Image (cartoon, rainbow, N blue to C red):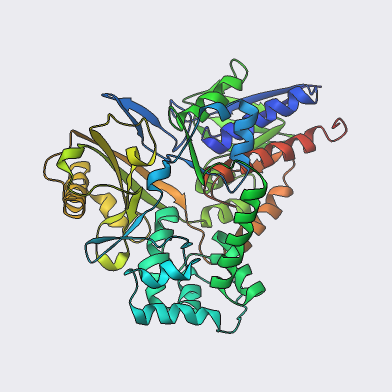
Length: 473
């Protein structure tokens, strides 16, 4: 008997879930129909690549990390490895803005602590007192804390300068979060394991670098830490779309609620009902909570408990001759102690080849997040003016940009606050009691593209296991 699965949400998690369902249905000869519902007129979620006046512009993520395997594996199955593009080898470094000066992040530095003592001791990023305090990590005793904030952990092991000048700006560039409330165990548990195993974060980073170096030598060619595609991240979205059966994607379909009906589900829309044996909700958790209010009020409340932050990116295009800084890196992050409205600025066309003509450069400046939500209350023009003034001061830009684009991301970044792992554990328990329902996306076990791919594919496997448990090969 044919089974029907409805996936709600056409971001990367929803696309990955729908694609994996189609793959499993084909490979295991299952009688399965897959429907993908998207409330907007396009899929891809925050992934958006556009072309304008000869420039290839990423309005959202511009790459994915390769240390987590799931996006790489998906690309392999899609036949995309031939169109990968690596970050430019000549400029693989970034800066921290300190006292209005761009200071290179020391080579080997990993978010919180140094991996190379020589470059660390030479850097002007920290004072000698700050460096001495960071080196105390080598002798401080271990301490077990059930769920510790990033700020608490870094202060305890490495000191205030390490937090203010390195950890906070680097982490804000990834999570747009407040380090005082960000759960370390939910975001970067590897540093907790380093303390547990080696008694020191610095020792742990050093050991992991030695292992990675040895593996690199033993395993032949390796991709760089970040990859994109020659024609931008939209390539991944297009490839996933091409693999979906004709008619399976339904755009501009706004879901209102999801109702239990016997052994199946009714997905109630403004203009009708989609009947389903299985449902994957790959929407923000607050949206999933709205959908499930009648089906399970307790689960709905837990889903709405996950907080989100809003952000925006200001994309500006300039002539190189109008910029005094030589842009010999991939960008810079900005500590909150600088009292800037900037979170970070990426030199997009320096990071990846083929994004801009040789005489021009694309800059992407990020604002908002948990530490500066009020900037999103301003008008687009006002935000652009503030950011143009700030990056002009930092980079020595002496003329107006050729053009600018502002892209807002309201309530788009889940906040992995203290207690997040326990909250997600409760959500999983309640979801498991609802046969044929799964949730997926960035709200639960990782915010990056590989995490979202993995989340969507795990949901697809769970749905297949539930609906076809007697037919799995």
